[in-house]
Image (cartoon, rainbow, N blue to C red):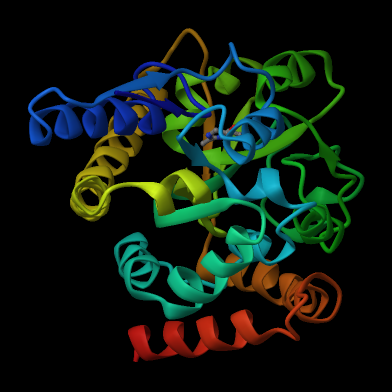
Length: 315
Ligand code: 6CS
């Protein structure tokens, strides 16, 4: 048997490395009975097309970013809220591992669309890049900020006065190069590996949220798995949580060093003071009301529960 596993990233990047490691483990555990075939991003359409492929069952597994289901599973945009999770990436991952709001309630919202998220994991804290350099909300004024296809991401940057635009990753380098978009957010490993630093002068260490990815499976396929295979999948997904935390951590650290040492394409790295971060935090707060009132289809229930879980984890 062969299971197709699509990712939104390319060889070397966190999602694809995840899929390869997952494939090896499944092959070992099934004595080669099951082959998992990882797919790099690029050949199978846009990120949004990939969501469709999983829903249709054309592929069995996918690493999916909730931003790209922003117009379908509206609740899933919750990860886009700024300064909601703790500053510690490690504590954030613990919450992602244990949260009932996410692993039960949000999962049910996705299952209504034939997508079962089996786990949520961070690819690292998000940073901003731009040419002008972002230090305070006013620096976003009128800035053409690239976001994923998510109304909440749009609202998050509108709250800072920016002019956000939805764009696929595949068009982002060219967009930044030509100035059709002027800024973007991503974890450090991705900024450097996708070479956005070549076409952006500065990176602001904002840590405004985390890039959260989900390991997802087609719901019907998963429900029809034999007990034996389902157990192997569940067990492997659970094991991979620590593995991928280490992977993103190493990549984010290594690529930061590479960026600092890159004299051919120098990047000014802007560290925000706690006071500067507080100004963004305050400007971002009203977006939570927007999420609860306009985005949530369950009266903010997932948000409220998650907030309690976050509070419990940080007390
Ligand atoms: O910015 C993006 O859209 C891309 N960023 C990451 C970290 N992974 C894939 C995604 O498409």
